[in-house]
Image (cartoon, rainbow, N blue to C red):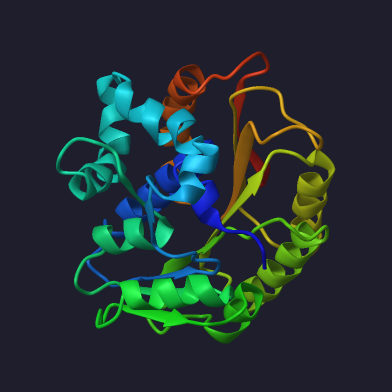
Length: 282
């Protein structure tokens, strides 16, 4: 309950997570039929980069700050434009002072028929989140543990959409809890897409999660990794990954375009790497 995403808003992990999130939304909007997004660990929705929390770490300067300052080739610019357009709209003066969390980014990209469900357990963060979306009929905020949310709100009535999972990773058993919750949710909604973010600090836990998914009968699992340096259990976070169940068929190729460029501009030292790997076949 101590984790506050404000300290990490806009960092290298958010860059990967929010690009993938954007590409998922773009993909689901290829069809006219409405869809729903469930964000299980929503945070507060939007972050002030001049706050004492973000100023204390300054992590956004190594993430979104570097992306905005870089010249992207046309192939990359096309893929990141929806994400960066939202960021720029929130900062019309050109100075980066506001950064959207996953809820804020998702909400700006939704069509009028799409819906967003947000759960957050931290009392103060939920209060801020709820106030931010007060009166928005397309958004539902719930003060609830994210793991319980997947058991309570799936499948959505729209029957289309995806679940974004980004826990705090404070608890030592967080990967196991996520694995159990997602496996249970998959049994209820096997056609849904699940997008799971995590720091690249415990390779054994990540492999254990993938093995558990395969053992439970889950298919079509894609892993995406971006390391801007060499990190491990005892270092600061220099890499993050996302595992996706039922990913869009377009996503792997999009990531193969994006990740080499991100790896280059976000580099913080030796050991940079990226990977797009189908860990469980369709």
